[in-house]
Structure formats: structure tokens, C-alpha cells
Length: 162
Image (cartoon, rainbow, N blue to C red; front, side):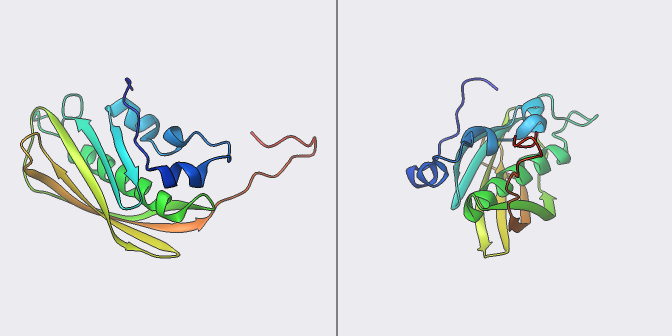
């Protein structure tokens, strides 16, 4: 996905250090995001930002597909929830709603996710998506359930499972 690397605050890097986890890979857009050109720019529990090109993510009328906005929103909100939960938990999306305010035909959309609620078992993020001119394209809200992370257990040969 190019040379863009996600920027994490030092306290997040410290929290996840020594766990053998590729932080940028874990807190990325995954394969779907790669195909769509989604980039996560900054990631912290308090604020996650990312971009998505309109080109390649349109519906038959040539407008940005509403599902593309939803992918950006869910990715950013999920990353925020996972960072809030920390390495001992995983975040699983349980509700996503999106309101589309205006159409976009070209350029890049930018999403910013901020917490509306960060608890022990759930986290909810509000995500505002804007166009290149800073006009609001979409507003979304994602709620994630926070569940204990499954720790790998050795198989009968003593190796970790694949």
C-alpha cells in the first residue's frame, strides 16, 4: 500500500512492545482495505484517521459507493476500539450505522474516528468522513464488543497452532 506508515503515539508502541506483534499490520485496513486503497494515517485510542480514494470505489453512477464509506468508518472505529481495549482483548463490531450526506465523484475521502464511549466490555466511536474540501460526506457510529483475546496454546507436538 505504498510507503505510508501508520503513526502511533509512544505509549501505544510501549504497550504493545515485546508481544511479537506487527503493530502496523494488526492495526491496518487488512486485505479489503488494501484492495480499496485505504490508508490508516494515525492511530490512538483517542483519535484514528485514515483516507480512501474515490477512484475504484464507486457505484455504477460514478459516485462514491456508500459501502466504501462504511469500510472506512468500520476500519477506523475498530482500530480505536482495539487500541482502547489493549493487547489482552479483541474488538468485534456489533453495530455500524452510516448516514450519507453528499455524493463524491473524485478525490479522496478522510475519516476521523473519536470515542463516544470507552468501557470495559464495549467501545463506541463516532466517525466523520469528509471530502477534499472538508465538507462532510458521511457520519457513522460503530459499537464494538470487547472480548478476551484467545491466547495461542501449543498443539500436541509443542508447536503453536497455525
